[in-house]
Length: 333
Image (cartoon, rainbow, N blue to C red; front, side, top):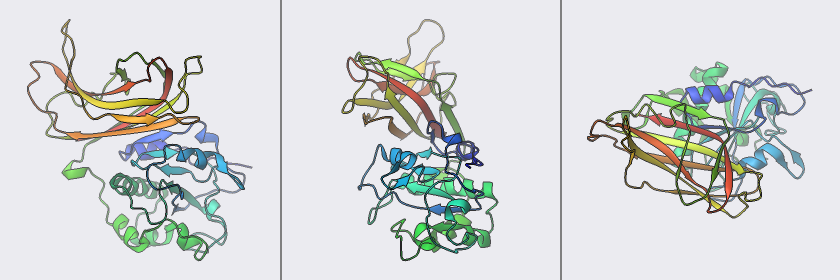
């Protein structure tokens, strides 16, 4: 019988300032068997080098010979956390004993974290920073706080299943545990104020050559950026799905995302959209497609009495419709 004790995963990660995408049905997804996690086990998913836009699909659904979910969490190439399951997952297999994990019971004793990564591949900067941020938050939630507790409860698959597994490679787990023990939550570049946004309402868009605003919060924008700030870092993750209509997006189509500074004015004066910011292309794959975009910049300057904000825009493929079923963003300033 399956149980689902980790329904807090998304909330804990967001509260820590992580960008989070919740996979549909995750709160009631899990394998049969006892599951009372007291440890965290790190993995890599052995996907091809570089970004794997649909890698979470394998983690959620499984692969030939091994049913999903294959972990509770997947960390994307761009440092976005995907929450896959609140219940037991097939991530550990035989191994141990190791620390607080019993022999052959890694699936029951540990939360599994898979990463978009493979052997001899460098970790991206977002994976390193957001991975540390997220693992710290999860460890705190589980009561893993002292150096001794970290040394006994934070492990890698290659430690638990020594001689059988090599993931995550390359990672010095003793150095990683030391860094985790000394980690102080806060921002990049000395910034420490975090605001997190999430919107699970379905938003539909049709491609007509016009960039459309994605609703991130009730204000339709990252409203904390309402005046000059010395600097800001914003990351956003978007889940895109077919609309289900005749003109729906298909595999091979490309949607585009951009974060954009705008100035809003009261009354009838039009919104001013600053010069174009970098565009991120999102190739449409089978099922849900995920796109991630980040921007670091100054947002100061005279607005002429307007309200400066940062918005997230989407451009659907020309003549095609799509649905955005989840948006999550984090602003750090």
